Image (cartoon, rainbow, N blue to C red):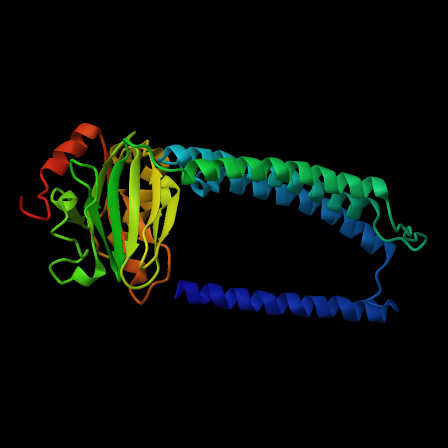
Length: 340
């Protein structure tokens, strides 16, 4: 009922403002003035309003940056993610500086050069100096960004080290399966022709490299500060392995194996203690409580970032980052797919 009354009040206020404007127009006509004629006094008033708007606009922008800035780019949980964060922040700083300079100039010119009857616009056609300035300076900045970006990209896409833990992430509509390479750190062969209800990955039982492979669903674990190499496959359509907290993503393409690698730097337990994570989970759990659902803890997740079908939204897997000791104990508790 209160919401309904608020809506009614807003609608009545809009009508009232409309009628007041009409009254002022009629009053101007009775005085012999045209309500649509813009005077120097009107222009001067609007120029002052421009400056007031500039101040309010910047205060609002700074407030937004302070309140929502930490949520824009949360802490990266991987080594290369920190490098990408630096590159992103560098771009944002450049954009913010240009944003401030151009908007101050825009509103100041509107204030200083407001319309007057005796004023005429200057006919200005060309300036080699200005063209050189706004061409060379952006070119230098963009060259630096591109070179640094290529270096970061080369680092991320370079082959993983020999000590990296090898895993497979297998995608199909609409779930993920993770496979560990076992003690030999080499994944066994697989073939789509061998896929059955019992052998979802099509693993080849004749390949000795796959004898110690371990398959897990719903949740997989990785050790902190240890490089992980993922080999990615898809069964029927293109999926995309997206691990947002690690700033890592790669397409999973049927008929081929794609790869990516990263080194996690923050355990799940450590991330749960971050202030912004605590506040985020409080908000999420408040909504869940209203729905009558159980509260949940923060977890890293693996998502599909391609719209792959009706249940695409539900295609995710929990990722647990823990100490190497905890990881080894967890892995020992899992059985190999083929009985040795």
